[in-house]
Length: 136
Ligand SMILES: [Zn+2]
Image 1 (cartoon, protein in one colour):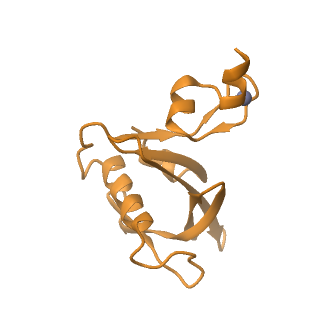
Image 2: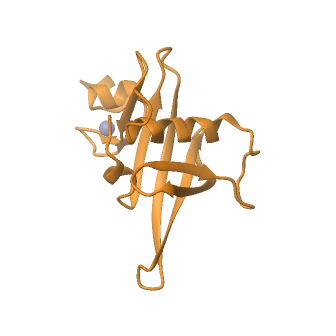
């Protein structure tokens, strides 16, 4: 499980995995406006091999409740499951939602051989990307 501070750190990538091994990877980037007086969080989701803009992360209740909000630039419809999955992951991170049996939220790892980012649950667990794992 990862921390809320990680999610809000500025350039956080994390993967949520369900008990069937199905997973979705999100990235949350922080942007400060007006000398930090206003902070925005932009959420992307991995769709195939690409990180695609999903929406902005809203602090409904600071430190407790967060949700990703659909904006005009969102590349997915409002009813897309990515929105629900992100909100669900954040509820687990903030402790509102207990982590269901078999679910995991991983933060991005880096490959122990080449230092590239790892996002698939299998690679994160192993600490190696598929190519490097094949070289061991
Ligand atoms: Zn590697």
